[in-house]
Image (cartoon, rainbow, N blue to C red; front, side, top):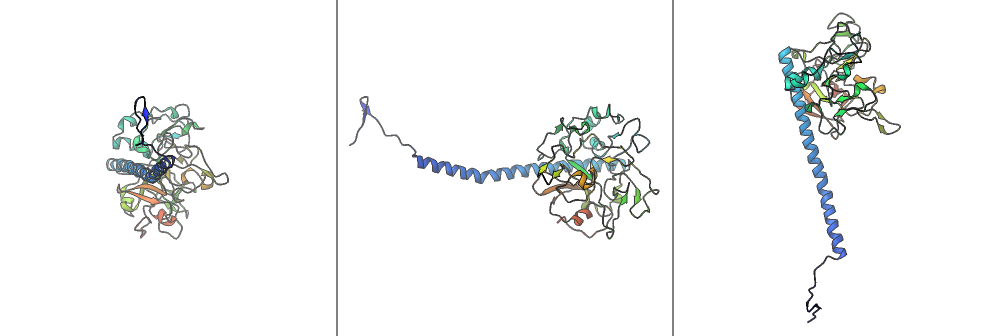
Length: 344
């Protein structure tokens, strides 16, 4: 018998891994991690998407309760003063979709902070509600700060909103929902008026005197003739310019604006910050200048290949980036009477 003595006793052999065995164990663990990590990431994204769906439901409820109280959906933007252009009171406007619905889904405390009549450059951007995060206004998949403080332009700073309202689409002349145009630009066939009834593309009156620009008008539900389950109300929007030649994205917040500002009137036709035309499919790589302006930028999200929308009936539906543009636009109009059954 082979015995080894150690200080007068036996020294036992201890079992140990060989280098080969250790490497095999490490390889097995790495393989398991490689298999499990995508599943964990997928589960996390599914949870974030579920939370985003809940956000949209809450926003949809806010819009519908507002409609029940006011007999119309909230306007895309209103004017506090008696003119559509910038005045001594200032160019900024705060009354819009995301400010007006706050009291209708239990955010009255933040709403009560708002200073709606402070519109000039010296006071408008220092609103007490500016940095107040509304949880339902930010998708959990949004990877950037919830409150922007370092943007180059002061009006880009504040608590973010990663959603925007549907302002219709400039449909082809062959379609049945021609838009009313304001300033030769904005369509007026969406759930939220970009500006209000004005001049139709053909030059005829469309809902108001020829050439009249009307703001502060919300759309009654009776005008949603395509069906509330087949019309977009609110969707995800978190657009940053994409520069093709440099293969580079614009730094955040990009073309997003804080929720407390509805827009501004630097001229007769305003910039409306939180209502968009549907001229490009979701997540299209585009720049603001090439798209034709802030209001024409595409909807989009940080979910893979998908953007979430709440319909006018309060249901939430996903839309794939590959959706056909004309189908997408038909769901963006309220009065087309189109025979479209699904968002595919």
